[in-house]
Amino acid sequence: MALSTSALSHRYIWGLKGDGRQNVAFHDEHTIVYVAGHAVVLYNSNEKRQRFIPGTGDSEGISALALCPSKRFVAVAERAERASLVVYDLRTPRKRQHLAHAEAQCREYVSMAFSTDNETLLALSGAPDWNLVAWRWAKGKVSAVVNANLAAIERPTLFACALSPLDSSVAVALSTTTLAFYRVMDTEMRAMPQPQVSLAEGSELSCHCWLRQPEDHCVAGTSQGELILYRSGDFVCFLSCALPAGDSVRRLAALSQGFGAACAN
Image (tube, rainbow, N blue to C red):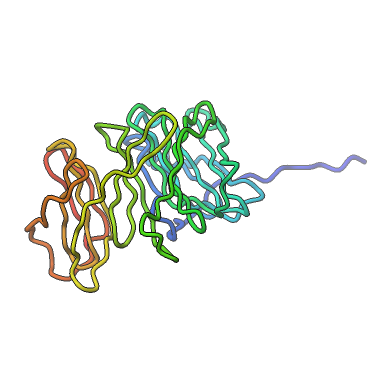
């Protein structure tokens, strides 16, 4: 007598993987893309239904995700003996491109960002490389690489990267001590003159965002509640805003006019 067989499949996954900085995004008004366990979940709040992008079998978990501006593609970084990135088409959702840097020695990518034209994917690798890598991802091609540990610190703490929404040739990498600016070209990436900012004693940079207005401005927050304004890669000033003194700025988000800040308390 033949034995009946059936395949198990996910129906729901509860929870949120909270140990990554980039782990949730809006796909559309009703669909949230987020990391839970070893999967990316697409949850439709109208239909109360989940779809899944499973992690690969040989990885140690998902370290970051990034949704492109058109909302069609999502990049998923997975931690492994040699870290890798996969770009998925959310319409299907199926794998569109697997990205691997042959010279990379890192185990994970800690942050990623797409350019506004969706064609470039910027990724910040973790130890021991601490590199910024720019991909022409649709071709699976690395276009530029630069070491982001400008101060040659033995154990740097770099944790975020981004491309300017107005000029995709300008990139930033954020560490606890520096917001570093880079010029991204066709085949190379060069560090721009770095702004000199004197933080308060015990203060560390914690987050940043590019502003929509005025153009070419960027704001960074600190663990002591300070807000720092940059323009064209130069330090402008510390902003005088009504934030709780000494309260860490956890997140910054650009609005049509200005920005919003979320603090620890």
